[in-house]
Amino acid sequence: MDPSAHRGEPQHAAAGTLVTLIRPPQLIRPPAPRDLRSSDITAEPLYWTRREWLAAAGLTVGAIAGLGGGPKTALAQQARGRGYGLQPDDKPTSWEDVTTYNNFYEFGTGKDEPAENARGFKARPWTVKVDGLVKKPGDYALEDFLKGARVEDRIYRHRCVEAWSMVVPWRGIMLADVLKRAEPTAGAKYVEFTTLYDPARMPGQRSAVLRWPYGEGLRLDEAMHPLTLLATGVYGRDLPNQNGAPLRLVVPWKYGFKGIKSIVRIRLTDRQPATAWNESAPDEYGFYCNVNPTVDHPRWSQAKERRIGEFVRRPTLMFNGYADQVASLYAGMDLRRNY
Amino acid sequence: MTWSAAWVRVRALSRPRWWPWLVWCAVLGPGLLVAAALLSDLLRDTRWLGANPVKEGELRLGTLTIQYLAAALAITPLRRWLGWNWLQRDRRTFGLAAFCYGLAHFLWYALLDLQLDLAQLGTDLSKRTYIVVGFAALLVMLPLALTSTRAAIARLKARWVKLHRLTYVVPVLGVTHWWMSVKADVGQPALYSVLFAVLLGWRWWHARRDNSLHATTTPARAGSH
Image (cartoon, rainbow over all chains, first blue to last red):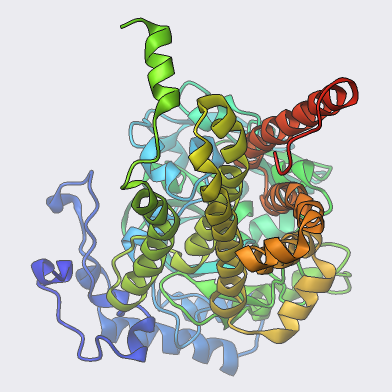
């Protein structure tokens, strides 16, 4: 029996043909998360109508193709739409896939384990420490940390180093706003991020798969880039625990593991911070981790990716499709060496 | 009934009539389930294999290959321990299953994962060590599978026994392939490493014991491995 019949979903005329090797468009599939009441949920169809979607995607592509100005101009144009760096055939990955296919080793190494093991995780109260080379360090309750920052909905392409990808409607604030508020000193060159370390609440930390706590880092100019987000939500609601509640980094032109989750500390430094995967396998994961189809992971090609929900692989784009906005950050750098 | 009496009874069990059915279900069932799950996921969006069914199915076939290999290697020790000599004929079935699942794992990777991207297949098979090692495991199993018929056993005689000692190389290659392919979570490959170490260690220990017995007393039995 077709389970979708119960959800009042339109039946797809092409069912059974080759066309359906690609999943039916997610736009018309309502989410069915288990631990939310239906009243808590902005249904995907309401959140995102097809017409609105096409408009945003078109606008984005137009902005990139037509303007070619500095990143700021292009982004200002895009700010009217909600899609950033999207290609015409990019459609948001379903809520179900976004929230059940996760790499979050603090809750287990299987893709489905975080959704299972993070169920009882309490992401409030939460404190974020901002310190290091800043004029205004501080420990903030999450509510205060977010106060005053503009919360935006942005749809980004998401490319995992494992050669799969998604399109995720994030909600969040610009990291730049947070950093400006802390007033970095002249010596600050890098930003270091740290995940919560609490093996009692994060069972994955009881085994030494990685060095805990997970740490990540960005160069200050990458951190200040208007595309760099601190996400607090996805699909218009609070981040599910398995996606890195309550606060995670999103850097859409870098491989997904740069998007450190459940952040408790943001520290500005004058030297390049150690990062979790680089420490684990330095020949496989560098500091930059920019999406680059021409530089393979030692164990697999990065030329193509499988979009979750699709069968046929698609080519991977330089900087994950954000080259116009970020390529200038790396002008003159050997990206093969600085992988 | 005392424990020792029960043990005597267990050891005296003969091959039940339904046994071959059990073996065939054990060998075919998981493969059919994976194939059905993929079709269902792709055509009807059922998510039986999760969000990334092509990757998940590939990994499951690989794991199953290792598991059938372990089953094939466990037959001889089990047979000796339980005194069930009739188990021996299932060894070939499980060995062939390991080969078939290994082949399916490779075909799945080449056809469904790489989607016949021959350039990438060429790069993978020449540059990526873990894929070379995995492919070597498959190549080693090929002659073993081809000479698994009764006719081949009869024709090759003593050479068959020698040739089929190659079986012991396959788990080493297979687990190495698995270990090298994971990002950081080596739990599963480590577990199977221990299992294969026990299964191969047992053989080594028995061979040594049999050899020393052979040197002092009786001729060794043929085909005891």
